[in-house]
View (cartoon, rainbow, N blue to C red):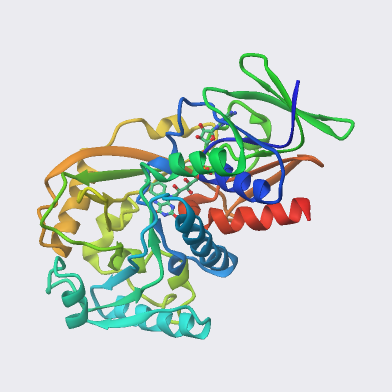
Length: 381
Ligand SMILES: Cc1cc2nc3c(=O)[nH]c(=O)nc-3n(C[C@H](O)[C@H](O)[C@H](O)COP(=O)(O)OP(=O)(O)OC[C@H]3O[C@@H](n4cnc5c(N)ncnc54)[C@H](O)[C@@H]3O)c2cc1C
């Protein structure tokens, strides 16, 4: 039986960054991924790394993640681009919240700039003047390419740190006996390690289903769209809009948040958990999303595999209110899923050396690098 210092179950962003930080400590690491290549949350997202949207310790993990992303990018191309983030306010309430968040982030020495309507339109000519009230801009935030990043990081881990990576390998059992842990795969292979770290995303039926059933985890289904490549459109960085201001945790810290009212126009959009974000990919296509529907562990299949045309149309109608480019030139649509938890993460020790970390929710591309670093330090130092 082959032995490692650490075995990671799951090759998504959480698994990959736990592997990265363990390998940096000189640990021998094996990543086991059930699919041919990762196809879950980590490849179905916008690729926006936006600490500005998080609060509390997640804001700090996000800031640290930006440093980690850029450090790796300086050595190996993992698709990180530092083009900043903007939140576009469309009415008085959203503009007030943007101003208040500016004050909060200034106090935390987090680089941000308030943009007037004119500055927003100059910096982002694709925005419609009628929509824009003003914006808050974060120059140091980054975008990544969700269809590239994880594959590049897995390559980097193997090339640079000699991390062992096995695809098509479902782990069906983990146990700890006498201080030594081992995993058993679906093909009955066994690997042993000092520690096992399980980052299995929203897969709840292969390992410890009884623990997930009582965990409080839920799954969110999101609808996403991507336009054809738009060579004449430039939309740099992460673009978030009025409904994002009304949704993201960081804005909940603003004094006006509690008493802010929702305009009638937003009510159908809010019913489907819609807020409108844009992210232009390297080929010029633009990812547009998203919506949110929810189901608890055990009922996640009820979310369905299809995307609802009605919901896509609602999103495109709102997108049309915001930008000039032809949002209806859609090349593909998909459903993405992620696990989330009321405590903002699900951390569970099966035994002293078998740990589950999942349910990071909609902030995994932003915060996993920093969060995993803190976990690995706690577990090994
Ligand atoms: C539509 C959408 C948009 C999003 N946009 C953003 C964004 O812009 N910014 C942001 O910060 N976050 C975003 N997120 C959230 C982010 O994508 C997730 O938080 C993150 O990808 C979760 O990573 P993970 O590694 O926990 O899970 P996953 O990516 O699901 O990875 C888990 C992996 O474990 C494997 N696995 C599971 N069980 C086993 C087993 N028993 N044996 C072996 N392998 C196993 C799975 O096959 C999978 O590859 C978005 C998510 C979605 C769905």
